[in-house]
Length: 121
Image 1: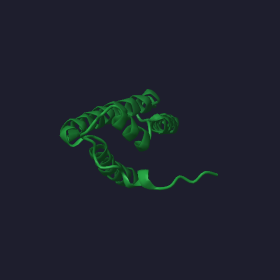
Image 2: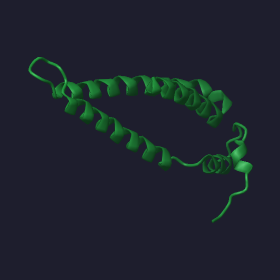
Image 3: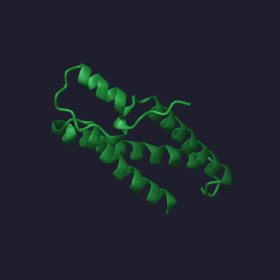
Image 4: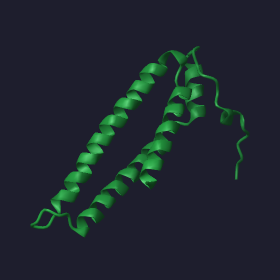
């Protein structure tokens, strides 16, 4: 239940973030790429976890407790990689500055957080 709620909330947030970060004329392409990436990722992820779980099974074909533990560790590793990839993405401010410097004139409105003062510690 928790996974379903998390996926539902993240998919909605992801779609909104993508639409807000691309020029208006490219929202269709960006949404399509998002849908394709989600579909392929879900298919590959389910197949990998199923393969990991079934690789550790009893002679009767039932998965062992260790199989589920290994499956959860694989998911945790993928989650860590996803967080690292998200941290490596350029910030909204930097993307906007690069687009302005490149002369892009079809920019979406600047996110509100770009106008907030930065606190230095």
